[in-house]
Image (cartoon, rainbow, N blue to C red):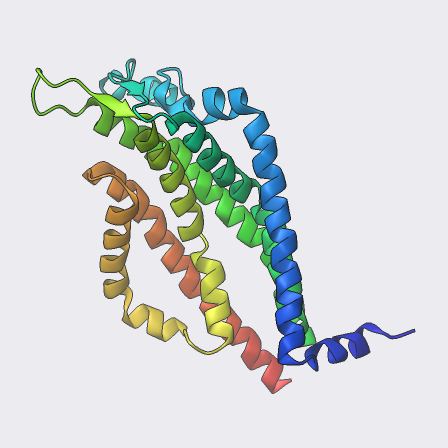
Length: 271
């Protein structure tokens, strides 16, 4: 019977084409998982659209109820716009688009696990030990970012942009595709952005990032954070600030993670 050490050694000695073949199968299994969950979302159209996607358009949405409980000044009791479809295939196209986004979001933990299975053989035993929880933490951060985008950024963006008027003579009738893109892009973008600590961990492991480097360029990172917040959010200051604050916090956490990685490596070398 071949032990784990010999098996890992054999996997590390795979040729370049063998690695490509392995990566291909990991990608195929990930695609199948995303596609299967997208089909499930497509079939459950009523729940996905009426409950989830169109939820922020409902004045009874959780975020609006919390805002009303805090103060009547920020209470939202009406979403003053109507959704409309102006393309023949618009509703069907958006149905497919939302289903694929739902499949990606729900399948993210499995996709992360597949990518981890591909990367793990290239790591040493101590590196594998320290990175053992990477799938859990990456999935947790991604889910936190998606929920933050969906419950915080998307409702405020929808309310602001949907109620904004240059004149009382102009009524807002929002295209269905525009609404779907806003909700999906904000939620997915926030999920990806919240992966910053994981990215920092691996960049530190390969020597591209250090805590001193991140502290030195903290001001530059703040500017980039504001620019990134402006890109993934609608053009209102409140949404941009709400996105920028957790990004700044994640940056500071990433500095701590980078320092912890270097400290762990120093201990291993001294031992």
